[in-house]
Length: 389
Image (cartoon, rainbow, N blue to C red; front, top):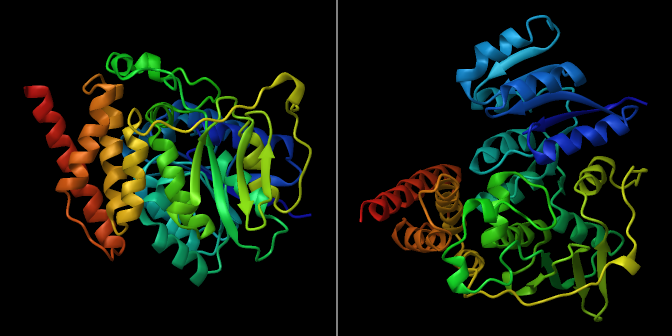
C-alpha cells in the first residue's frame, strides 16, 4: 500500500515532535514529505537527518545558510526558507495530509494554500479558525478539503460525533484543566511569574500555549474553533474545568444523551486519529485506569480568568473581532514571557485593544491581515505606555 505523504508545519514544537513519533511507529503507512520550523535550525536539521524528507523549510530566512550547510551532505533534501516557501511547499503534488502545528497567525496563510491544493488538513493551529473561521469553512467546502481536528478537545468532540450522522448537537461540553492557577485568588494572581505559569499541571506544551492555558485564553480560542468546526453557536458551548484532563470533551444531544471521549493526557492519540481516520491503529501508550482517577468538574471563574470572558465577547461580536483578540494576545503573551507585562495586565491590554481596533463585520482575507497588523500595533503601544508610567 502506498504510504501517505505528510507535511508537518512546526515539526520542532510539541505537536510536531509527537507527530513524528506516530509516523515512526507506523512507518509502513506514513512518510514525512516536508518539515518546517521557525527558528530551531539545529533541531530541524536533526529531524531531517532522521526522517529524510523531500524538503525542509526554515521560516526565519536568517537561518537559511546555516541550515543549508548543516544538510550539505544530504543532496536529496531540498532546503528552503521564508513564509512564502511554506505556502508553496504545502501545494506539492505528493503530499496528501498537512499537519498545521505552527503557532499563531502565521499558520493561516499556509493552511489556505493547502486547502486550495485540496490537501487533508490535520488542524493543530487553532488560531487559523479563531482568526478566519468563516473564510476557512467556506474554502474547505469549495475545494472539498477535509479538516480533521488535532486539539485533544476538538478531537474528542469529533470522535463523539462519529456515527451520529445528522443528529443535531444540543450542547458541546468543552473541558479545561484550569491551568496552574485554578485555585488562586486575585491577590495571588497579581504576583505570579512566568516560571509559575509555565508549570502546567497535566500537559507538556510549548511556552505560548502554556501561558494561554494559564490565562484560559487558550480555552476561549477553543470555543471559537469549536463554533466553526462543528457549526454551533457560542451559547451551545459550555466550558467545564476538569483538572484531571481525562474527559477530553463531550457532546450532549437533544435526547439528553452525552457522549464523551476519555483517555490519559497524550497528544499522540488525537494526532494518530487524524492521520488514520476512520481507522484506529495500535498506539504504544499508557492505558486509562478509571480506578486511579477521580473525575471532577467545576465552572470557570470569569472574573479571575478575564481572557475567557473576552473570547466569548469576541465570538458574540463576530466579524474581525476574534482576529483582533488573537493578535493582541500574541503581543501580551510574548511580553509576559519577556517580563514586560504582568499576568493580570495581559487581559487589560487585550480588552483595550478590542475597544480601539477598527471593527469590520464582514472581513475578507486582506481585512484579516490589516486587522492583525493594527491590533498588534495598538497592543504594543499600550504595553509601551504601561512600561513608561
